[in-house]
Image (cartoon, rainbow, N blue to C red; front, side, top):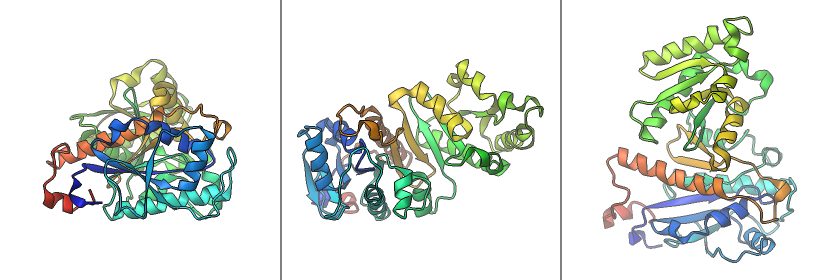
Length: 356
């Protein structure tokens, strides 16, 4: 691709689990050609797998160009970089090692391109944590792999929508291990990431953050647990000393039932389901999973592989579309923070520094 074509940014999309709904939601989300006016799209996937899904879905609307690598992308088009071998096999609705290998391969190739500055925004389609681990991908999920790849010691699973933004102190951790994985320093670290993200990624000048308790009724002053008094309240006090505006700890049930979350710019939950269950109820199909604290922008739909409806052409692509547009908006906000107008045409010298 001619480096002086002056596209504004490159979006990389990993194809996720080939036996789930990933290709369906990618095809549907990319059906709006207006999306390519200011950018180039590259799918890290498989032309063979894409053709299979296109036939299964009876969908011929998406046309993509095969590219050997991210230095050969066609501007303002959907490009496909093959990350699979000839033995790839689709088995709709099944968890297989081959599917896990393909999920991991797509992510690894995309990460290398991120490191080399060849793509600007990463969108990850859903993976199956069991089969990627069977394939030798020894991480609980995307977030942990990306954090290690970029040596990002402080990062956050940040679920975002127009109605609610919520982060979690402990992510993919068994319930029995949650309490021992919560500490004052860890809570302060997560509050710091949320605070910085709200300012830099979402342009909120003085964000207010709510902090949830761990125990029922936030421990009832030690009657139902001591984590609030021993860990969470001291963490809130320490964060306030850093200038972070935060309040709590709030009992999770009443906090969401009363609509109190509407008074805050974001919420910090103590564990995965405490945050994600109310988030998915409130955000509906418009929720997005954003990894805050990374040196690049990564978003994902907030749902899984949905094996039960794979190949039936009934998957809702809204969350994938929202993930793409959220990624673009966050990237643009970061550019503006650097003093760069993301909509201003690049000079030839500026364009030469990127692939497009």
